[in-house]
Length: 360
Image 1: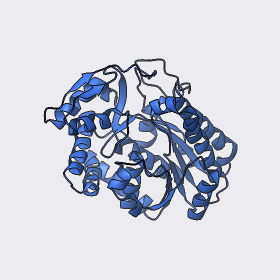
Image 2: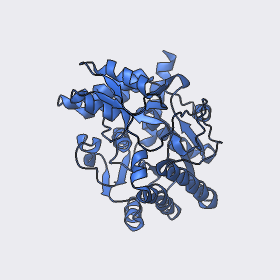
Image 3: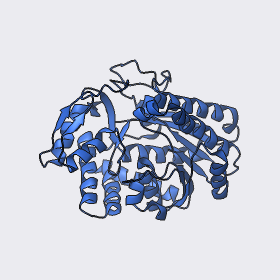
Image 4: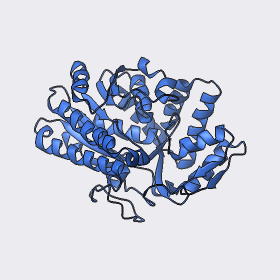
């Protein structure tokens, strides 16, 4: 009972803080971004989003009619002039940077564009912050893949070396370093709190991206086809999308009033929720039912890390944050959302309900 009461107090405190706050979100047309602008709008924040238009076909942004939830500017973060125009017109107090090319395999296919988006997009946003008198809190969301991966069996800590292997991972390492430089060179002196959050693999309703395990499972199961796994033995820190979003909102809110709380934070599941991909597929098959099954088929693709975990002690100690849903629940909530969509249900109502359940 005490834990439930504490969770509800956390939700109330967040809601009270974000009501009427001016929040600038890059990447609002993406999967995480769609959930974030929905949650911010639910809490009464004034939200401005800047991102590329969602790709043709299915997208969470279209499913939730995202243009109704915020001021929306469609553009590339690599376009400094257009980004600054939207940024300056809104005069945000809080900035949450999600915009990214976020797929490892796409980084191999288009490395230059990946660096332009993930590195120079971050530099452009930080330059907007540097030139703005209004901003007080900035959070750059990167990835657990920023670390030099040594295939360790223990979790990486924020003090470990940053040196991503592939273009996506490395561009995010570069994004981290650029953020550190802007923080130390310009923003600390101005009293602007700047943090980065390194999140693990995120799942949840509304992720339709290619080359991601849960979206691939959902597409195959809905079509009545076998789920094909490229590497069922790779270990990843899977978590529901609400887990890191809660951490992002908590960090941005806390450092807004206390510059000393700014820092670099891992955001991942508990140790016992770092699963091999095959185990994740087993949980999905059980949650979906309807005869779903998976098969293993190596496709000879480019290098991807085989083993990856995060040590999240720092954020737990600094903010009292902790994961709320285990992997089984996270997969079940993802399936629930997708079956709601496929049946023509109200996905906004489903998301609203899941946020409430997350805190209860």
